[in-house]
Length: 285
Ligand code: PMP
View 1 (cartoon, rainbow, N blue to C red):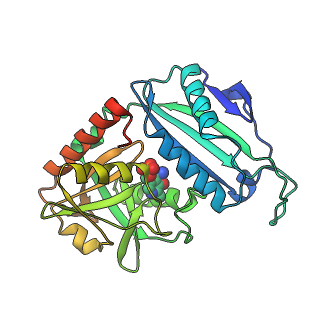
View 2 (view 1 turned 60 degrees about the vertical axis):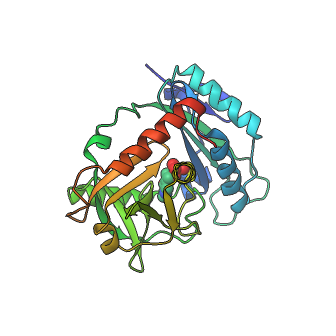
């Protein structure tokens, strides 16, 4: 069945949804996005996604076309129109369209697109198996804290992982892991969670925020610092987080098994806790 897609104030069957070929999102990757999960027909941690969207736009001097209330209403409406009970809502805002030039005009009207993707998020077989990871150099620009649509390198990273027979890639800079292609990276050693501190080098994950708060609540200690690939390979457990993967165990890095080579008990517990919180309260704590 055809989805209903939102473009600049109007609702279209997906076949009829269009943006200009002069849109700077298309020509220059001049835009930002958010991905919000839907579980049991409810939006997960939407306010935080909305705040990060506002920050991404402001860092790029793109006017925010909507208030938090309007963004929420649009998300609720697209969810309802598509009967989405589990999956994700994708939102993209670009600077807008004008004749191609590197410099832009100040009066551009941002382009807004929303669409849904129905997807089983809870019953993910990868959560039972755990993921295998390949490490690759982090060749992205240095404003990774802004959630831009410049996703070519992370896409290449996924393909490099796939070609090497791995599920995903973690990126490494100066010998230290930054983050995954589309997720934040963690290890656990002696019951302590270690993950890189926030900086322009990584995206401030919404799931990261929630999971670190949950870990804190349950008395697990957290250390925010970078770790090397060798340290990760010698860890007891490893995992990644993202809005759609939640907490996902990592069982192998560059061919080296982590701990027993199966999803570890603390990661399994964090995943269960996160899912429970998401289903009961839409997260935020
Ligand atoms: N880092 C990167 C590079 C990402 O693309 C994502 C997912 N968008 C994340 C981390 C995780 O962020 P979130 O928990 O907000 O999905």
